[in-house]
Length: 138
Image 1 (tube, helix red, strand yellow):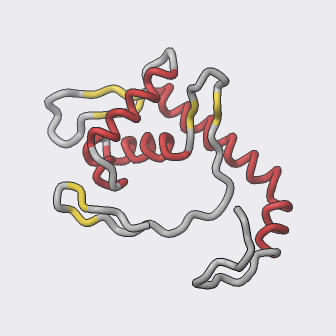
Image 2: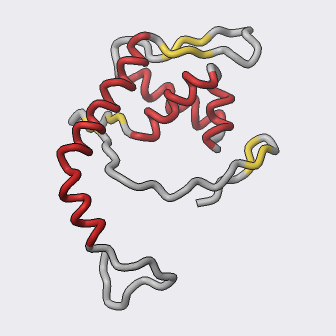
Image 3: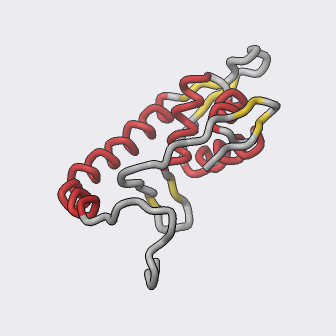
């Protein structure tokens, strides 16, 4: 899927993803998923919500809304902002780092536990084609 322009910076198209994707639901409507974790990791790298949003091809507003959603899900702060620090105004808290580690651990354990089944499914795939097979239903 191609990404659009963000502040006149052309974002590269992302490669199709492969593998198991985990979203953890907490039973009350709250969740944490791969997009939220990727945003936190990008904020960690960029040290800025704006820069992270640009790098991920999302609007600054969308990034802030996601950060706010993540923050409202947990008792401890996930990020800390430093107003006035040019270009580098956001850091992860120790709990933000722990959140990433816990989620990535869940992902790794799940991938290990399901590897044989995923390999069997992958081996059963038809060769890629431009047209979907006739009579198939999702």
